[in-house]
Image (cartoon, rainbow, N blue to C red; front, side, top):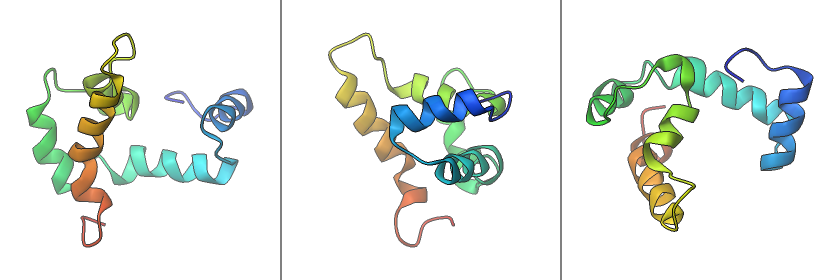
Length: 94
């Protein structure tokens, strides 16, 4: 998706996550336009090593927390959700 939302890519994401085209469009706007300039991300990204390229969201953020090749996959997802919680709770940054 880094190179655009082609029909094939949107179809694959829809099948993978059960999301429709409009939801995927909202996700793209969030990750590409709304998330990177937030005060939360400007501060929080410094806690990640290495610092991730903005063009690679959300994939690089997933890579920082979720290791699918280990049995501790659930721990990584939990850590990612805790990391993002300041922007996803009532009264958050949006």
